[in-house]
Length: 315
View 1 (cartoon, one colour):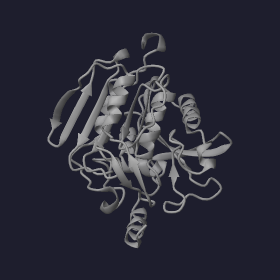
View 2 (view 1 turned 180 degrees about the horizontal axis):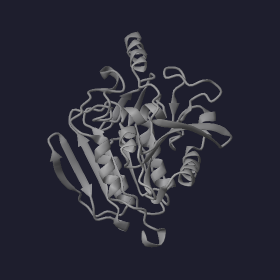
View 3 (view 1 turned 120 degrees about the vertical axis):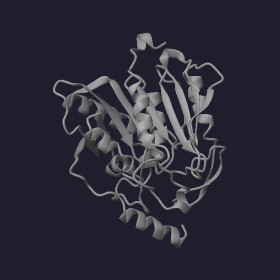
């Protein structure tokens, strides 16, 4: 990696959010590993009320706390809307401390990437166990459990939509690829968002220069919602609208099991979480940032519309 980019990355890390008293850390054993996470809870929960649970998955090189704060899920949880949990992925080399530049954390998303030891990490089982723990500890509504994530976390969110379809009411991956090798057990509502200037998840696909060096050929990001529409047995073609300036929506709403697939394209957005707490990495790496769209609010509204449908009724 060129030295100016390394310097920019280090400066970005120094400016990353620090720990906040508004979240609670936790850990559990899963797959022979001690896994860690942070939870954001409502500041003044209503007595006797059940709450949605949102699983928030960070991008490669990140961590759960930074994801909660950068994407503003912590403040929404504290306002009383839901419980938000942000687990930490394992680093590439399991026997060494994580390091953004030399040993980044990323999710085992079904792509078979990374060192052999990392490919053996079962992140789906970890997140399922984490859901079990939180539903036992907090007043979580089992019909309102959701997953969202960015970049590597988005890729993992796609996988969870397949492997935990009987537990997740809806998913919302942002700017990430997917390897959809099998169909989910039930139709899954999906919101997928990507920027039209994203150099790491290009709309039309092509050669991608990776932040940690090297290049890879990526398929078109715009094909992913079409794949989900097929899995959810949605009627074609999608309805195309512009909900606001700079935002395009392709919506498949006539789907099996009351599912829907929404594909948002944000004009002028790179590989960033639009409307978050500023950009995550320098512009030469991730492209432009915009706060013209509040991604977290959009996803929250999408989740609010969906409840888990029993398998017997989801066909």
